[in-house]
Length: 329
Image 1: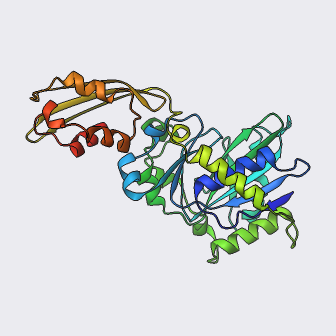
Image 2: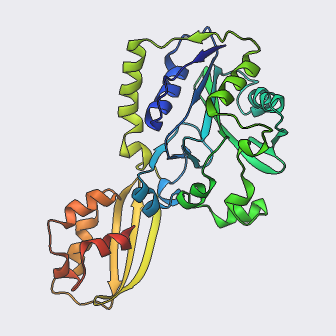
Image 3: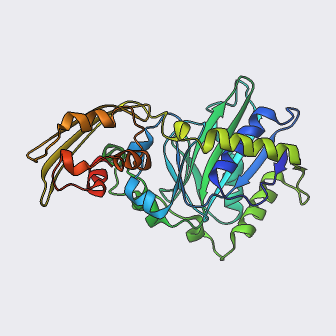
């Protein structure tokens, strides 16, 4: 197995592209191991509805990246205190969905640092009943990666602010909040260490040798990684457009306008139907405004640009664009 140095990149789009590039294009005569750290981001599972997983107003205000990954599973929050790891290996009959095979080296490394970690459930690592790592897999025909998070010193309050966690999921876990069921590894270390020192100790434990063998990415490799990042992970259609069909309904009373009831049908990130109800007044027919919304991406900036071309008060007296966008989002 060879270690891949990601050269300190913290953009999630680059790191996810690097991981995909490794599983698809690096020489297949070796397994690889990768670390990466992302700046504040929400990483969405491949099959999730991005719109439903995030606190969108908070995420946009904070400039938090929202990026869809190739693997399934749930949405996770990343920041500079979270270390991500990835094993890139052959996809054989003993590997896919066998999380224990890949998590045992991580658990062993943590135990060598005095952290009483254990594998729980299908794909988690916990300490004292609190989750410190969640993991997922992605497979091609003959290659795969198993990747996961290691909450080292993450701002756990941001997890609860940025993610919109299903109450049903929390009820199933038998706890009251996300914050109560997760923990940072740093809480369990007997001595305070830096992220760099943490990474070094993990590598030594996983590779079982002082000299860590590496695969050095070439300039051509990096050019292709950046191209992949641009084509997929910076792409709105990938990150949001793959979301399944969903309905949105929001009712609000706005001073000087009246009560507005907005209903949208969104499919693959595009508004297919729009209906506006309420006790408001307006000179224009509200159906014209509804038709204007149909066909637009369910994206705040795209809708804003369209609304700026009209007088929204003509259709709904007293309403301004910002208040209407708050209703939509």
